[in-house]
Length: 237
Image (cartoon, rainbow, N blue to C red; front, side):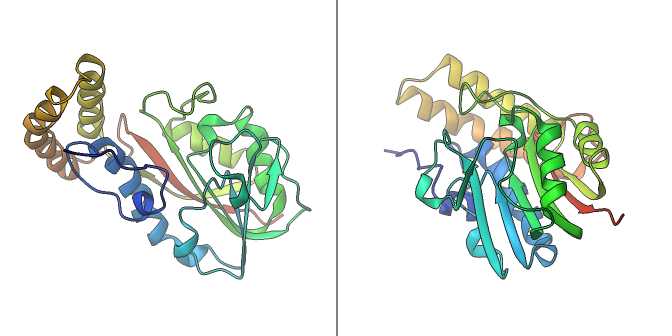
């Protein structure tokens, strides 16, 4: 019998599994991981992990110093935090960091504009920030799931706070959104096992086919996506 994995473990971020029970999680975390790996050369020096949680990507990043900051009410282990903050004001001096990562945090932020301002403030001129956010996903970490950002919302937040957008990558297009919708509907209709296990195996080949179609039918940016991965650089004055 299948045992659900602990989704907070670093292994589930660094090696996401594609299967009937983990398909939607895979669609999010695989894209984040691939984009992060592609942008590792920009993440160096003294690095700040905003909303660090359990620091799942720490082992991938070769930097001089890795500093994690999170809020006191975070569901993750507080012993992994180097600093605690109020979710708005970063407790660091101006231009303290060479690079920043902020993964799957913005949707939980009380004031995203203020957080972008703060990230710009503590980042050195020319430094890079790697930021990710979901767009189509179920409510999570309730009640601290506050918003969704579009491609254009991510771009606007960056440019209005002193950043140049280097790249915004999608997390799949409409077929990936359809896959996520199918699994979400099924989870609400049938939750008892073994019926749910059987149903997941039945729909898996069909959803896998949709996944392959999504990979070849591209529109930039897509009209709808599961989320975004963005690389930005702080402008020189």
